[in-house]
Image (cartoon, rainbow, N blue to C red; front, side):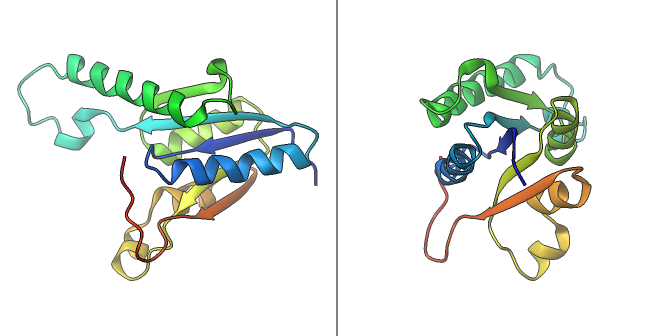
Length: 150
């Protein structure tokens, strides 16, 4: 199978570089397939359940600006700025929507390989895998003994 448009979904940790590098290698083997990279921010209202009696817009905007800067650092030489996206919503839902709207034929995500309760509760990579209309590659990140940090 040949890929034409690869979507790399990252969490902005140091492991994001590993996920992007895997996608770049695949793109090179597929005649320079297009790469888009994205990060999804959950709305602050979701995180706090709407229990905070204040306007969170400025804080959400600051988080958005920070995410865009961090994504640009990760994408640097591999992905042009017009193909770098920070979206607000639930990660797996936004990844699926973007993939469908932009004719993505491969989604590349990082996977921490969780077990036990973390596996039962699910993760973004599991959610992406189960709802995707295209191929999904889960790149193993955060190996035992490694710390994920921004």
